[in-house]
Image (cartoon, rainbow, N blue to C red; front, side, top):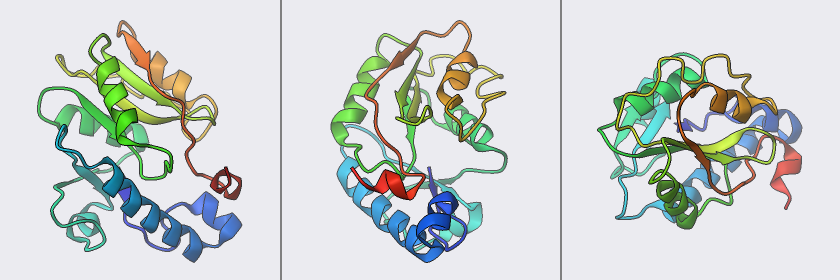
Length: 184
């Protein structure tokens, strides 16, 4: 899931600390590096972009990668729509602001889905950097309902939105929301 790296529209919490231009620049270059690192023939990489029209037409993202619009709503609405809209089979969703993610992390997440209905990659701040589902059945209607986004409760709330599902976890990684996250 990627946002068009527009000044003042992406990484705004980071931008309030380091400047909006610098935050947009960081995000653009971070996502370029990320896409190069995770592209692999073992999976199909699809860019879920926002805003919808600008993201679909953007020249920022590699032209050879397919794109889908994220659509409206909060983060949970958009992720739920993506999980329901992809072809059958396992799907993992990540954001573009995780500097440490490597192919091996994604391999592990897909492996966890072998024994679970869903997988989360916990983030150090209580959220998550990855969510995946096996998708042999349609994701539950209440998926991500009531999640307190951008809080230390986001992961726990998201897991709670999957009653009756076997949930597994993969590696804990750091996402970048603030200037302090850029160090280390």
